[in-house]
Length: 78
Image 1: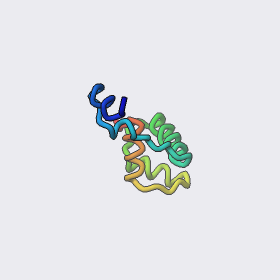
Image 2: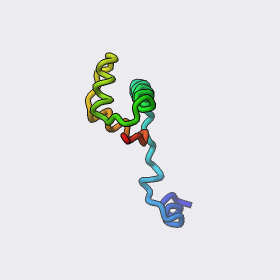
Image 3: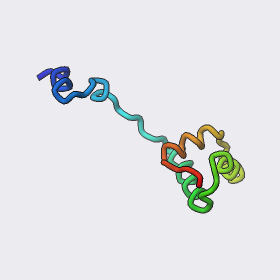
């Protein structure tokens, strides 16, 4: 049975069938671990303050990347 017919029967678009998510890089994983440790220590810090903490620990990173990784991990400031 062709892929188009299978997708039509399952009510899926073909693009969802072919989509392969890209793996997370090692640098992003290490940054995510650091962000998680900072967040567990101080859950009230937002992306900007976490960026300052990372810069103090010699991890140069921009605020938008911190916010993107926090969003990916499901972390929000209290």
